[in-house]
Amino acid sequence: MPAMDQFSAAGKPGEAGDFAARDSASAPKSDTEFVPGEFVPGEFEHGGGHSGGAAPSATGAAASGPGGPQSPEGAAATAGHSAQQSGAAQAWTALGGDPALLARVSRERRAGLLPSALPVLELASATVAACSLAAAEFSCVRARSALLPPVRVDDGAVATAFLSDRLVRIDGRAPVTFAPLSRFWRTADGWVRTHANYPHHRARLLSALGMSDHGPAEDEAAAGRVATELAGRQALDVEEAVYAEGGLAVAVRTPEEWESHPQRAAVAPTPLVSLSRLDGAPTPALDGPPGPGGLRGLRVLDLTRVLAGPVATRTLALLGADVLRIDAPERPEFLDTHADTNLGKRSTLLDLSSRAGQTTFEELLASAHVVVTGYRPGALDRFGLAPESLMDRRPGLVVGQLSAWGAHGPWQRRRGFDSLVQAATGIACLEAAGGSGTAGKVSSSPDLTPGALPAQALDHGSGYLLAAGLLRALTEQRTGTAGSRLVRLSLARTAHWLLHDLPAAEAGTGAGTGAGTEPGAQPGGAAREAAGAAQPAFDQAPWLTEADSPLGRLRYALSPVGFGPAGSATPSAAGSPLDWARVTGQVGGDATEWV
Image 1 (cartoon, rainbow, N blue to C red):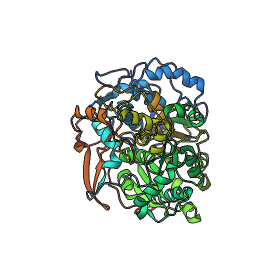
Image 2 (image 1 turned 180 degrees about the vertical axis):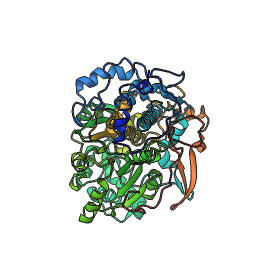
Image 3 (image 1 turned 180 degrees about the horizontal axis):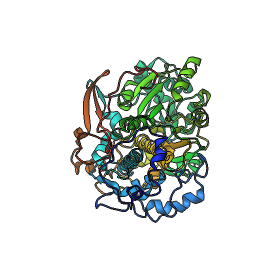
Image 4 (image 1 turned 90 degrees about the horizontal axis):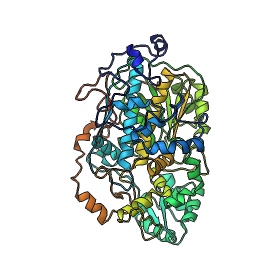
């Protein structure tokens, strides 16, 4: 069999002539031969992966139309099959990948990491595995090689990376993850979760509650007054009043209450990853050799905010892409979040509401390959950033769109963050029940303080899935049919995956009770303490590193995404870098131009 024919139809590189028109240079071949179906003991099982019915189409994850939701009938038909698959196989199927490629993925399992009432470690390792495999696949396609490098996923690296926003240090200083007014609050009939980290969200929360704003420095003192005010209100009334003011607050719901919510009904039938082809435009060329990671020459415009979108674009930067992060001058990202999520990228400030800003953006867009946005659907349309508008001006573009609540349903226009999605979907109640030793007896009792996942797992997991979706879109452009692509995800759909589809954690592999590390979250209880005592302390040091940066001495988590021969300290085109090529610089410290 010719070497080029060793790829399946989903991942087979095109003829050399096809690539000549797209990439100006080739690269050395990798050194690990891919044989479809070869399975090494201990690697990711993909039970049923070869027999789950028709293979996904070249346009992605069972979408009924461009950006449209999966039909309820299709969702029901695949539900039983999903339950038999590992998390990695489920994620890879959602991405439209060839299941045979999963045989190249191995996993180093480690006990007791990311303990939770839910299979958080399974979600984490699955999303990293899918992202790494998508990166390896694209590297082969770009290099015109049939030799797929191996992918190795280490639970220790994964767990450390999922805590990167908490582990980052600038000159030894711990980050501020939640502001004093971002927490759970007891109400007259239950609990509500607020998010007030950003100044404008904080101001809107106080305004909705009819409270005076004495500035962020007084928020610790103001917390007592907020608690008193909310204790006399109904949770749903607070949710609606704060939303009407443009702020962020969500009533804490049980899983059963979320099951009957219309937003859940809108989200549940949609694909975990929606990958759509919107036109037949030619594929923009990538200049130069692919380099380690395979993405050298790829230009990415990053218009995202904490945390999922920046995790996705941070991953593309690791793999060699030129990623330019754009923030509004009046709303730059927080320094701690910037330090963690802007590794490998460049950062600039650009006022898209001005004519000069729009002109500069159009110049950047003219040679971009990928644009990623992380705002609620429609929020950026007035700036000309709707996917269809972007593709009209830059044919062949790949657009990634991430939101909190999804592109359909009554909450599609609402702002949201990981912590709020956890509260609304019942996750906070499940973690509280686990922390109190009553897992399986979920209660909405006001006496049971809500819990939290051991990491912002919806954010991080969605980020790696988004990066994987973008990589698969780039692969499809070069192996299937050309055309602009839209990759769409939501935190609420990732939460649905965690709650309903992922296999339960095995004993000793991250199963347990909620960690409750957010302000106001359930701290755990005797059940979690007993489980933790049975496991050795998790040493994160192997996956942390330090470097001097324009911000100071920076400690950060290494990326868990990678592929290539084991034990290679010097990455080549056959593998991915072990670290980013540049550390984080100052917010807005780079020129608004491509390298």
